[in-house]
Image (cartoon, rainbow, N blue to C red; front, side, top):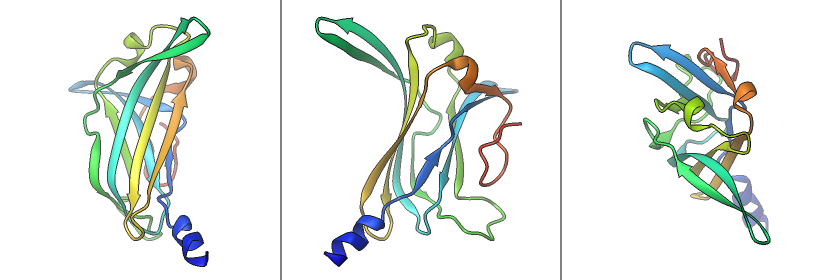
Length: 154
C-alpha cells in the first residue's frame, strides 16, 4: 500500500493561467496561456490542446461541438522541473495561437478550454490538467506574461 501511495504522489504538478494574454508583434496578434511545472521532476510527453466548445441543445440535454484551435506548438518531449535558483525559468512555458480568438469566440454560450497531458519523469504516471475560459471580456488581457512563477500580465 505504501508503494502505491508513494507512486500516486509522484505525478506531474502543472498549473495553467486563469487568463489569456493578447500580444501584438511584427507577425500579428498572439493569444497565449502560461504553464508552470511545480514538480521537482521534469514532465515528459507534454501534449496541449486548445478547444473552442459550443454547447448545442438537443433532445434531453445539451451536447458540445468542439473545434480544435491550432497552436504554434502543441507538445514537448520534456518540460523542465521547478528549480529555485533557475535564472531562465525553464519551468514556465507560454503557448498560444495566431488565430483570432476574439473573432472565432463569437457567442456568449461558447468557452475556450486548455487541456494539458503530461507524464512524470520518475514514476511514469500520466496526469491531465484543464482550464476553462468562459467570458472573453474578462479572460483576455492585453500584454505578455511576466517572467517566472507569476501569472501576471503586463
